[in-house]
Image (tube, rainbow, N blue to C red; front, side, top):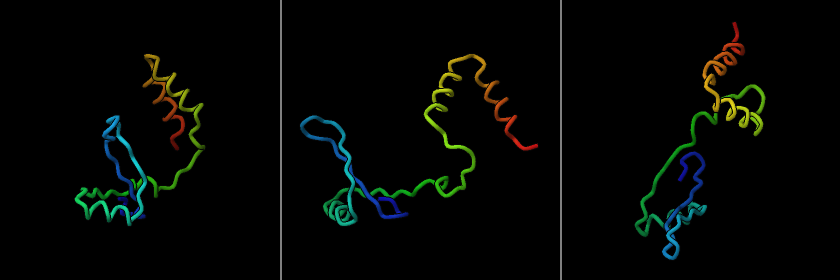
Length: 89
């Protein structure tokens, strides 16, 4: 259960196929599960979600470019040069 907005979910292993199954759960369902002995795990949203984000949106093309960059041997030097170019002086 998320302590920020009380959204919840539960997961279990299917007895037939043994795959993990996850489902959303209302507060009422979570309370019912906990009352029957299911262990409650409370979490919070990452604080990064509250930060202001400037700059362009990260796109699938950006991800592909980054992936291709990592395939080369000089990726760290290239990445450092890009970051240093963008930093204010």
